Amino acid sequence: MPPLDSSNILGLIAGNGRFPFLLLDAARAHNLTVVVAAIKEETDPEIDARAAADPNIHVHWLSLGELSKLIETFQREGVTRATMAGQVRHKQIFSSIRPDWRLAKLLLNLSSRNTDMLLGAIAKVLADEGIELVSSTHYLEPLLAKPGVLTQRPPDEEELKDIAYGRTVARAIAAYDLGQTVVIAAQACVAVEAMEGTDATIARAGTLLAGTSEPTTLRRHLTVVKVAKPNQDMRFDVPVIGVQTIDTMRNAGATCLALEAGKTLLFDQQAIIAAANAANITITAE
Image 1 (tube, one colour):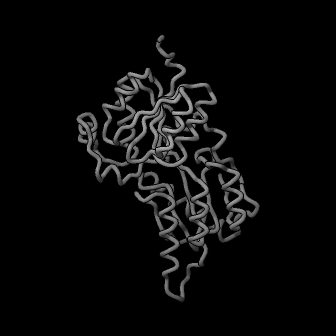
Image 2: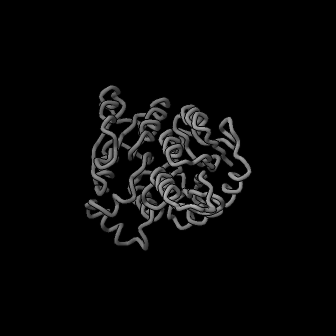
């Protein structure tokens, strides 16, 4: 059997959620053979069914700490370009992960273990082994948020004030790689994202505000502001919004979602906008 043309092969490091499947569909639409490194602790097992139905999808399962196995798998399959898609929960890095010798060496040499530092170091190791890590949005540009108001209802005057304040706060914390989301009420910061992720941050804000005793200066509506990091590396940790985020906002009492245009992926945009309109939630991007 002749070797595969590496220019027609894409490696996919798959985390959790629907992101890996969207990227998989986009890559196959470009007639690429996709070699999936499925993370045992994160990837949806449905990926196996996709591979069973398509001979141009090759799935290999590995644990989060098996960096050497990842490299060996990609090299064996002829992968010279790869992308990351799907979240790897930050807490996994500090819990049951058992790093192999290569990852252990990498971790020991890091000055800090934030997302950018860790994934940037992994990208360098891959590059040293002849595997270029490319942007996860390369095949998904139509899913990036466009500038403007995306829903029927535009932000009201109070929401615009919360957006302006929230963007200032969110960009400041994003610069420290702490998170990319803040939740604001009456120009006060109710919750800041850390390792728990966007939806958990929104839910926590809803709980905090619901628990405030009367009288309170905070109005009962929350504004969610999500930004990219300064100098966002689009190869990893790209801001993502899905329908679940809108459901979480509705349950938390959030009425406004502000995004960064051109740097935030909207999964199933029509469903997101329909859900937001139904809940009278406004979505805006700039």
